[in-house]
Length: 175
View 1 (spheres, helix red, strand yellow):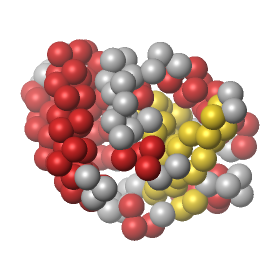
View 2 (tube, rainbow, N blue to C red):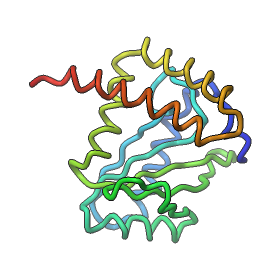
View 3 (cartoon, helix red, strand yellow):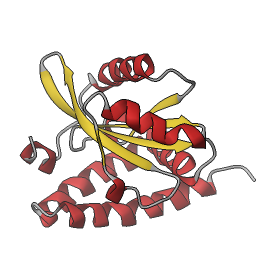
View 4 (cartoon, rainbow, N blue to C red):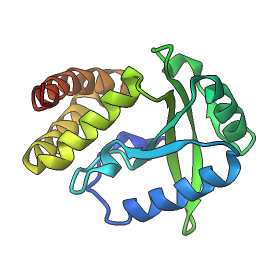
């Protein structure tokens, strides 16, 4: 399973259906109000990536830890080291879809947090700009090739690009 996450693969038209199923699953185990958004490469039509389904859960700040606990009870794993911001908790794990074992990354945050705003700003910018999404896909293939099995290096390359795109996206927001 690990090796499959070291490859950049083309976009799969099945991603929206996979997300919908995972979203229903999450709603079925969390007994309070949450908002679930599809983020990451699989949320942008035409954008290839590592075939990891990225999800953003937005809840009240005081419920963030409870969301993690409920997901842990279903086999997901909390990773405190992946949460560099105090406003974000990160949890990941497997999800079976039509017999295939997929990897899911779940970012838990609260309404109005930087994490919430930037994840959606980035996704929406790429959705509105397919040429930029294609460019990002080409960069991702190049970065993975350069990084080899060093995912930290790959993430470093991506972070610099994401910062540039966020600046472009913020410029489009009416003042």
